[in-house]
Each structure stands twice: as structure tokens, then as C-alpha cells.
Image (cartoon, rainbow, N blue to C red; front, side, top):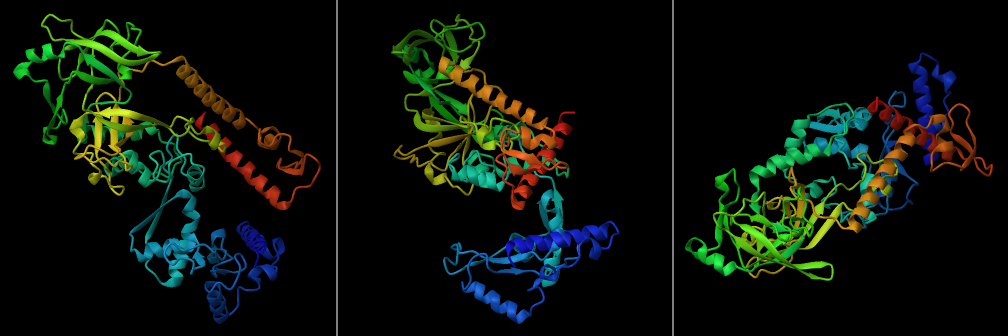
Length: 551
């Protein structure tokens, strides 16, 4: 039976079922066509079917010429009971058998069987699989296999994310992301690589609970859960993502004033959990601070370092005063500062973090939303954010983390070491790390899991950065405005006014608004009209959902 015949067969069965449902005579409303129902191959012998199936397995037929279908129930009101396909021919290498295998099972056939063989207690699915519960149990009944309990719930939709497999495949195939385990992907491997542990994900899901109502979860709820978990379990370290060199001109003098002549300080790995231990940091004559902690032009609302201004330096406790800015062109290459630890010094409004001269070079990848809109539309590829991954290739982290970030501890199958970079955010060691703590060589890579609740300082933006930011905001605003206008289009006028269809058609169905002729007068095929009808149904559903959310 060809694909078109199968479609016609299902349509006939559906019309007969609908007639019975409203109390009409199915033989009058949708007369049986023996060529379609039961069909020329439905009542053939088991011996013949086994022979044909063996020929399929041996590769004696072309793709699309034969399928093995289940003899189910064409009298059912559920179209998923209309003789589903169990196996089809596909000449693609099998993951284990290689090129010697060419028949592949369909999802509906394997789903229940795999669940049964694994003896699972509960098969949990999203709501779109609710109508598949009946064939799920029918197959297990027919095979006399153990039947798990089945529950359906709404999909866990999160802002700025897509969960459609087809869309995720496009993200990977078109190199919008690094792969299936990219930290921006909503996959288990991607979430793990981003730094979301099993505890974070379990707590997040437990807090939300299960529901059958459609929902869109604020991504900030996931971030909040991550912060609560990581705040209690991750050790602290200092880092500079975009480092600026600082020369302390009176370092030797201040060192002699220090207790025991030492500039080494003990720091707790966690301020709230002493069991996590401690580490030491050593202030050196040359240190590095993050560029976000320095501005050439000071302001009353800015508490970071600026020319002729002092700021507190963490763990040392004294003031760091900027005396001179060394530049090469417009680029700041060095700050010359002095320490002030005198008793009468002015108390600073803030303390900045720093890393010593022997800091470990690393690459830090800061991840944000992969989409510019909270709920990506059908034009989602245009809504991909170009700034969802920002790479700081010359970042520095203090050497106290050397032992815990060694490559021997990096494993793509487990959650890797998580750190809180003080005043910056929570970061995790990435699987690209090849760092050897003994030789101090090899790449060290961190991914940002989530920012801190409050980011005290904001980097002073250049005119180019401000223009780029304004451009992104304008793009996001335009996308939202286009979505709003699209939702206002009456379904009857959808193909006349929607941007992607406007001007393509000349005649429309008077009752549905679906196009029947192209702009040049060419009549559309039934298949094309059917696809357009599906587009219209999708628009109606999106419009209803939009109106319900904006009452």
C-alpha cells in the first residue's frame, strides 16, 4: 500500500468513526471501499507476511516499497489504532549492526516494548502522547507482556528555549551551537556541561511539580534554584575575566609593615560551611583586576577604581589608590597604584577582587539566552541571539584552584568541579579542559552556570558596544511587535496579510480562507492545500493561546 493509499485509508476510517460518534450510519456517510478498507494486504496469511518481512530484512526491496503494519482496529475512534507501521525499510547503517541491517522499528512499536522489557513502573509522557496510550497498551496486550502505568503531563516549557527535536537538530546541524552537549542546549549533557547538577534539576522540578496545564516557566526560577544549591556547595576563588595589570609601587614597603612580613592570607572555601576547608592567596607586587572594576571617568554612583581614587582590596584590607594609567593608544595596559593601610585612611565604599602574578591563564565562556525572545515563534531561527556565548580567552584565575581543576578530574559523564568566582558568578570546569596541575600547562576552560544575584559593577561600555546593545534591543522589540501584529490577523485573512504568505495567492476558500490558487492563477494541489490548512490551524492555536495570556 502506497503512502497516499495509507492516508486515504486512515481518512476513510476516521470519517466512519465520526459518523458512528454522532449516531449516523457509517455505510451511508463513508461507504467501505474494499481497496482501502480492509485493504488488499490486511487479511493475507501469516506465512506470506513472514516471508515478505524476511525479504525486507535481507534487503530485497527498495525503501518505501514495503512496511510491516500491525493489524489493529479500524473501528476505533482513535486514529492511532489504524494499523500503525511497526517496521519500515531504511538503508542507513545501524549503530551496532552496521550496514548489514536495513529494517527499523517505528516509535509506537518500540516505546511500550522497551518500557516493558526494562520493567519500569511508570511511563511518563507529555500530553501530545495521550492519544497514543491506547496503542501502547494494545501492543503489550497483543504480545502478552508486562504493562507499566502510563501518565501524561504538560511539557516543561522554559523561557528562551525550544524543546522541539527538529529545531534542536537544526541548531546543531547549522552550527548555531557547539553540539548536542553545548551548554546552551536543553539536553542532559548540555545542562550537565553548563554546571546544572542532578540536585539542581531535581529541586527545580520538585518545586514546580507536575501539571496538565500548558505553561511557560520563567528561566529565572531555574537560575534561582542553581544559586541556592551552588551557593552552599561551591568553593570560592577570585578571577579576572578581562584582566588589567596593576603595578603596586610601594609593595615592598607595605610588605615590611605586614604581620610576619607576609602578604599571604587564609581564605575560607565557603563563608557558610567550614567543612569545605580553606585555601591561601598571596598578594604580589603585580596583580590583575577585572576591567569592570576600573573606569577612566569616575562618577558619584560608581564605587570601583578610577584615577586618583581609592578602593578597598579584598583580604588585604587596605586601600588601593590609582596614581597613573599607562595606555597604548586607546588601550589600557597597566595601572600604577599604591597601597594605603594606615589607620587614618578613608574607609572605601567597596572592595574589589584580584588575582596574583602567578594566576592561571584560562578561557571563560559566559552563556546567556540562546534566543532574544521569551517564547520563540515559527521564525525562531531569526530570533537566535548572536551574544548567547561570550568568550573571554585571556581570563585569569587565582592559583588556589590548581589541584581541583586538573584534567584527571574532568569527566563528561559527571558534573565537574563548580566554583564561585567572587563577585562574578558560578562557573564549572568544561570538558574541553586539558590542564595539568603538575606542569601547569594545557587549556583550562570554565563555563558560567549562572550569575550572582547582584552584579555590583557594570563594565563601562564603549560607543560601539552601546550601539550593538541598542541594535539588539531594537531587533528584539521588532520581533515582539511582529509577533503581536501576527496574532491580530483574522484567520480568514491569514494568508493575505501574514508576511511570509502575502502576495503569493490569488483565490481563497470562502469558508476557511485557505488559498486555492497561486498568484498567477495556478490551482494548488490537494497536498499543498492540506499543508496550508495545517499552517492555519497552527495560527489559530497560537492566536488563542496569545489571547488567553493577554486578557
